[in-house]
Length: 151
Image (cartoon, rainbow, N blue to C red; front, side, top):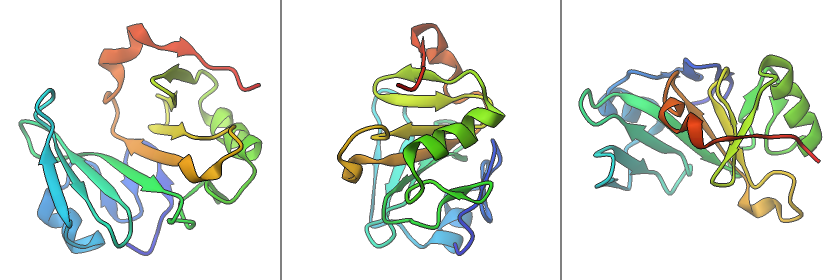
């Protein structure tokens, strides 16, 4: 996957939500391991070489989420590099398209654009991660979410 541009609620680059595991693997490589989440019955794939995680739905076995670590420096939202730009610049750019972010379990959640941030606004940048998700993925947890305001 050479294009790491986030397409809100659609996917990242050529990888689109709704794809099968085989389709995703053809674009970003085969996973090194995978496991079944016993609570959600979702399948999570891990790729050590590029650090991308892919999550597939329980029933349809279709892609619902992609996770990225800091080694994917090309990951960007509307041209803003999420892991190399200033945290405030990243937040402000996402906020321009979703003015109502939430917080839950350490994630800043932008429901309208399908992006979560974790590890941002901390001194240790090694803990940063971004997930990109399909529409509705976090909706069941919305009652537990709190409004997020950057400090």
